[in-house]
Image (cartoon, rainbow, N blue to C red; front, side):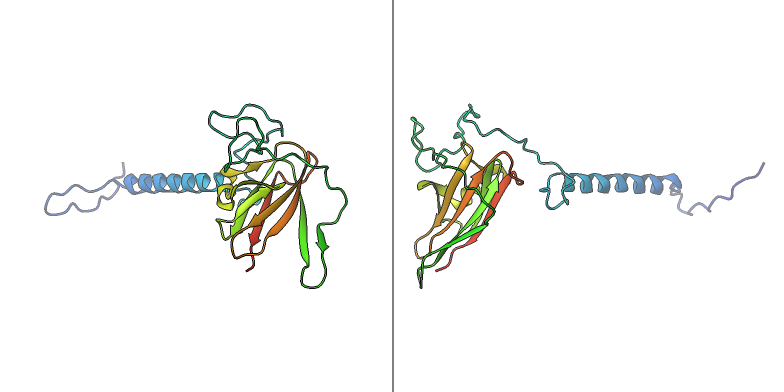
Length: 196
């Protein structure tokens, strides 16, 4: 029999920590770090995780079905609610073609309209964030109301929608978003900095 040499006991009688305790503490810390990394990646948007992580929100059809209680229907205005659905913008005929921008006007009155395609809806990132958003000339709310994936503006039906951003002291800017089932993007992201 061989005896494993033991470290000498402290003179004051304090017990010696077994060798497996630091190893167990290390394993627990590594497991906690792994869980933290997993949950941190899991709740980010797919662009941050290089498209590996799937969206938490399943794709929804563009029909006006009953939503959760207290929530507006897709396309409904968050500024002027109405009971007769007179606040839902009507879809226009879908814009076709490959052009991504349209420039109109002459001289100092030139304006441009960017065309975007999406399957479901849009989110906005606008400076200033209190700019008003209009869809087909119907005000739906402030830009900050549609700023995250939890606050997506859902288009009520397939077709084209003219989105206009306006704020006092700034020039208006507009986009045309065409909602179509064959669009490459689920959600159109409108990044806008209004000019004075």
